[in-house]
Each structure stands twice: as structure tokens, then as C-alpha cells.
Amino acid sequence: MTMRLTRMARWISTLSFFAAFAGGTILHAQAASMTGIWQEPSGAVLRVDHCGSQICIWISMLSPHADAPTDIHNPDASLRGRALCGLEIGTAFTLRDATHATDGTLYDPKTGKTYHGMMTAADGKLDLRGYIGVPLFGRSQTWTRPSGATKACSAAPSR
Image (cartoon, rainbow, N blue to C red; front, side):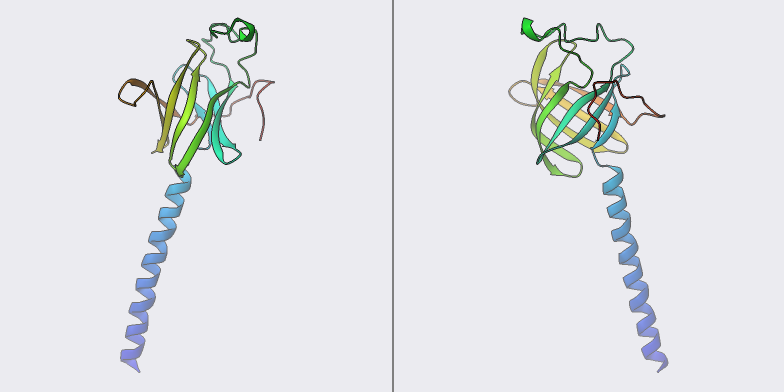
């Protein structure tokens, strides 16, 4: 009887270890998720979220250093008057897993240029890479979670 209890205790201990390990992995994946609110280096706040079966990015709060509240650098003159607040700047990213999205496009309202893009979330950061042709020919930027509460601009879509 004692040997049977000892084996059962070992089995429960092993099962508990694996359950704790799996739970930690699930929590880590949720913490590393790319969806949610992010802040880019100049201070703008962006929302990364699902748009259908893909991932998109919208401007939720303009940077205090923004040139203008409208899309003044857009190469299409008819779009230069549109508000940046609420503008979708990341489109059609394919979610590969909770922390990686590829095959999307990134619009840079500071230059009016559009690039191919990919994103990776890790350690409370979101790394974006915009590129022309292949990722080797591009530029990266790291976004972080805002440290405090943020106030979305009035035209920003809410969830």
C-alpha cells in the first residue's frame, strides 16, 4: 500500500509540474501578444487589433511632435486633408502565431510612403520592420506598451 501511495504521489507531483509549466507558457504567450495598445518612440499611440482574419494598426493618439493632424505628406493630394487620428496605417498582416505577423503593409504618415511589413512581439515590445522588396532593405522600429493611461483621439475607432 505504501509503495502504491509513493508512486501516486510521484505521478501527482509530475503532473503538477507539467501543468504549471504549461500554464506559464500560456500566460507568457498572452503577455507577448501583439494586439492591444502600443506607443511608438515619438509618442504616438497605436492600436493593433484583428480586422477580420488579419491584423491591422490604427493611430489612436497623435504624437505631440506630429507635423499636422492631417495626412499632409500623402503622395495623393486628394488625401492630404484626411485626419491622422483613427487612420489605418497597418493593413492585412497575417498572424503566424500570437507573437508574429507578416505579409502586411505599413503606411508611414511622416513620409507618405507605404512599405511591406512584419511584426514580432516579445518581452513587452513590438518590433516592426518596414521594407521594400525584401526585409534586408528596410527599417525597424520598436514600440512599447504605454506606461500610463492614454486618451484616444476623437476619431480613433474603439473596441
